[in-house]
Length: 124
Image 1 (cartoon, one colour):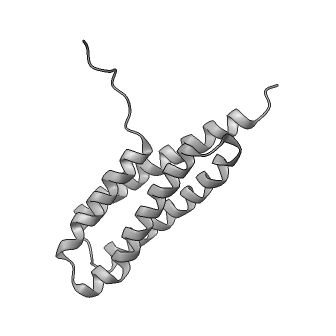
Image 2: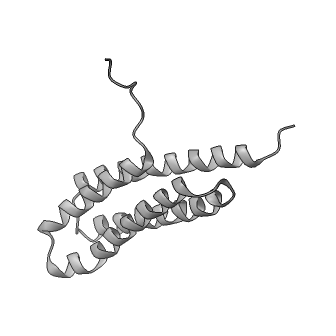
């Protein structure tokens, strides 16, 4: 029996991997940083994971609203991670790795929004 065809990882998987990355880097932070901005970053990452799962299981007529929330929260997370870099909580290598993951998640979210929008719009 041959293996299943190669599929692109889902956005849910990408967010889980991002969370694991964010969680693992917090071990070297001071208590102040770990319980401050980084706690918010971790929490927001769990929130975008929840929104992605909620969208996957939502009916078609409410997907767009949840996806918009996902898009907004992802952009908030991008800005918080950038702030962590700017105030020297994370180094450049870590910042670039996490930012790359967030850009990929943003692209996937926007693609999902475009798909749902096209599906809902009447064809001419």
